[in-house]
Image (cartoon, rainbow, N blue to C red):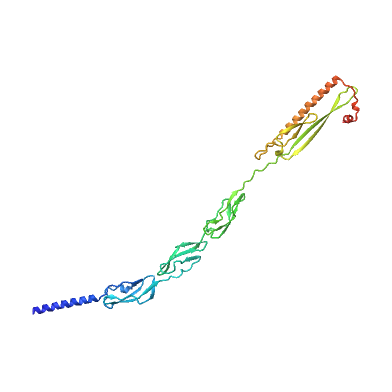
Length: 344
């Protein structure tokens, strides 16, 4: 009896083991996604995949279904081949924004990069690239107008009277205060680089040349004296009489700069000194020596008068000596030429 019970127990154990082995042989391993495909969230929660189990696949992030079935089935402990085909998502052209341009040379499919640029006179604020992701284009950017610094000029003023900075292509006009002159262009533009073109001008102080003082006119006198010896007779003496003819010529010179540097004497027919002006000398390196003191002219005139006095004294002395020696009547005083001098 006991032997029979023992045999039954062994048979039950063997049957149980057989069932466990058969069941284990019918399960499939956990499936994996294919090219650009993944298991759905529901399929990922499953732990056991017995015979005829079906799971669902879907396209990876950034891809969309192009064709094929999303399901695979466990048959004889293996999964059937996936028929799902996925392709990259196309983000399309980035949404337009004012004054913004896009370089889409890499395309617009998932993962592509697009370079962002702005029109002339505008600059990017934000990212200069956009990338195509599953939800669309990433990156925020905008184009803002270029501005220049506040214009300024020393010793002058500008036409810009706003607290805001001048924007691209704004014209600024410059003016100098009285007594200053503008060097450079009086109008400049704010260019696309945020600089002024041409450069801002400057105001320089006007330099006035020192006023030229007008010089008084100076009179130069040419003194020419001519002696004419005339013999006259009286009852008591026969001493000759000397008549003196003196000619004074005065010339006016507009400016002292034209006066001669040297005054030279000129002897007349009677040996009397006559003063004339000579051509000026001493021009060197653009400078002309000029007579700056009118006293020089006066000294020359005084000298001539003194010399004249000496000569007159000499003549009087000579006349006195002639009277002491005596004289005789040649009757030359009756000649017509000498009568003219006697009547003077």
